[in-house]
Image 1 (cartoon, rainbow, N blue to C red):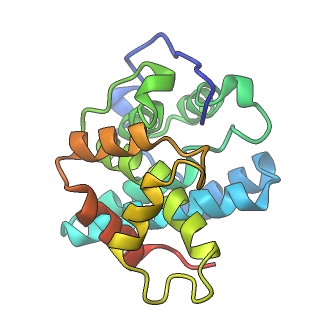
Image 2 (image 1 turned 45 degrees about the vertical axis):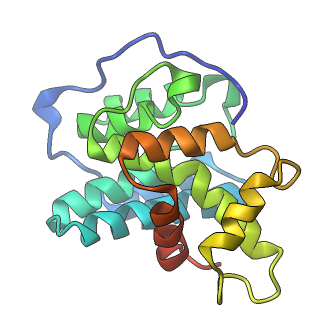
Amino acid sequence: MNLTHPLNRIEFGSQENIGNMMTMQEALTLLGDWVKNDKLVFHMKQVGHLMKSFAISKGYDEPTQHLWHLSGLLHDADWDQWPDDHCRKIIEELEARNQDPRMIKAIASHGPRYFGVEPHSEMDKMLYAFDELSGFVHAYSLMRPQGYEGMEVKGVRKRLKDKAFAAQVSREDIADASQRAGIPLEDLIQFVIDNQLRA
């Protein structure tokens, strides 16, 4: 992500809609209508899977797991067709559908440098943490003959230091997200390796 589109707002959705969540089929239909880039769809499915896996690892109930899953699955839904309105378009769509404001806020804060919205909740912070890092780890898997099999944290760390590799991925955002989440980068990388959705 390299475009800055400040949202110029800090309130998202309505508190009266807490608990309102679309079904997984409705979310996938939205992706099918909005996103034609298969790689982007896969990225969002990966992030959604990581978000759900993290919620499960914390022992959260199924509605909370679903909320986390949707937040990851839909976070880049407007990037393909409306890059100049990235984040704004999906936020407005979810607000129009009276979706849970916690999901909308997480999506709004998944790139604080770009959208000007700070991640506050655990869900906000983990979406920010998994977004760039999952894409980076996946790029690394594509250059390894065995893909994710046998992948080690030190290999990912080595590639992070190589500024020419996956140059579009912000190392600054990855480090910032790890710090905000309060999780060592090594632990985040290991979680992504262990839980990443395979192609």
